Length: 267
Image 1 (tube, rainbow, N blue to C red):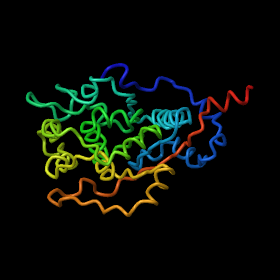
Image 2 (tube, helix red, strand yellow):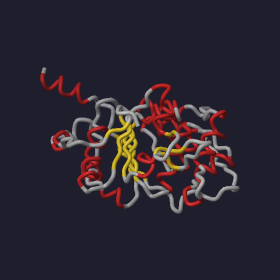
Image 3 (tube, rainbow, N blue to C red):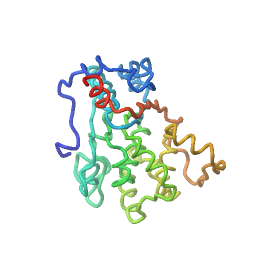
């Protein structure tokens, strides 16, 4: 893993969270945030999605939970935005530190796959540049009972879910999915089998399968004006990859930029 892609916490301070202004955007539930930053959800194999505008507190909250997990002695990884055309290499490769790797195929990075808590920033960019690999990573982690925090901007989230026709690159499907089906049976991913055999190609559908269905208030209002959508139809050739529906705690941090609030206060 390149230094810029994944970093562990090194004494990061929680002062920003201790002094966090919950009132400035008018939408955050302080009790919910304070519960999340205890990292108790990690022990329950639950997940968090943080969605909001720029400088609205998403990263502050994510770091709070990340630091709490570290303080408990849990293993953690922080995955920042993808590095351009090298995005795939940030998630997978060849060698002993890649789960499912063999001489003929790549595997997912072991530190990202097996840590207790994975925090991913700029999720919308990962879903745009390496959607198959990224969803294989998140889906397999959920299968293994690992917790995830996904951080995404409102504009990126609306862009992803607004693309009904946004498809995963079909050329990448056989190669990427084949190596995710590891040599050892106990390492094989049913989620990967679903991608390969059922031919899932929509990012939106993949999100729904792993339990992510959060919509911003503006998106929900738009949906209310449309005709009801058809229920998700899938083949039953592959059994459900999850023993139970994944739990996601959705936190919407609003759209008010905190830097603008500070500027107005200082004016």
